[in-house]
Amino acid sequence: MILTLQRMSTAPDYQQTAAGLAGWFGALRTRIRKELMARRTRDVLRRLDDEQLDDIGLNRTAIDRVAARAADL
Image 1 (cartoon, helix red, strand yellow):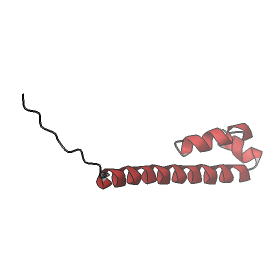
Image 2 (tube, one colour; image 1 turned 45 degrees about the vertical axis):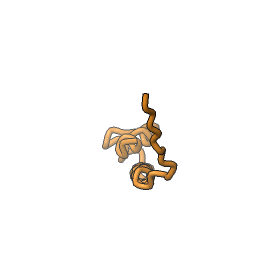
Image 3 (tube, helix red, strand yellow; image 1 turned 30 degrees about the vertical axis):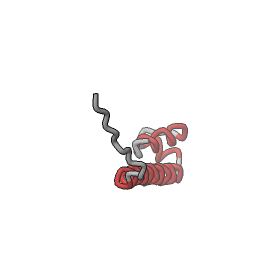
Image 4 (spheres, one colour; image 1 turned 60 degrees about the vertical axis):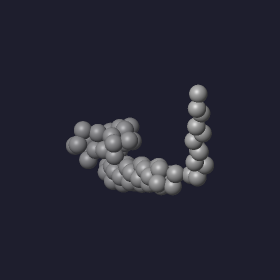
């Protein structure tokens, strides 16, 4: 029986690490954009008076839910 030893690489795989970091930063950027969109939507809706909100079928308690849905959170 002949045994062969294969040398295991101990060097880190930089391409895989870079791809993983790029994916992580991309997901972070997407999340930040969504949070900013939700914040802007909330700010705009909060500036409306109750009559204006009623005209578009909303009330003050729905603002956070609508903003989160608009930003796809």
